[in-house]
Image (cartoon, rainbow, N blue to C red; front, side):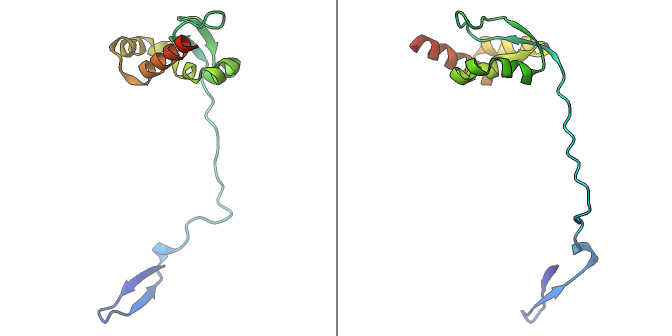
Amino acid sequence: MAKRRNDDEEISVVTTDETAEVWSEETPVVSEKIPEKSGVFVYLGPTIRGFISNGRIYAGTKTAILKDLESLISKYPQIERLIIRDCDIASAREKLSGGEGAISVAFKALEYKLREG
């Protein structure tokens, strides 16, 4: 339903087919989840002695890897950003050495947190 003003400033209601409701309760809603791809991931953060070391390789989906590291991530949430897919390692290392991007911020924040204890 659209509203239109006439020249004499009265408001009238105009109903057209364009304003008819497009969705009905019978319209199916598709909510298929795209399956996550398995792959190889590498941890590019600072070593946390006894838990995780720089360059550690993981295989599987990122969700599964993060679930396995859940207790460590709860203490150090930056770890989540420092687990990188194998095809993105070169650009991630470039960003780390250049001190730019979210990965560099996460690395420095985790490094600081580990130093402070």
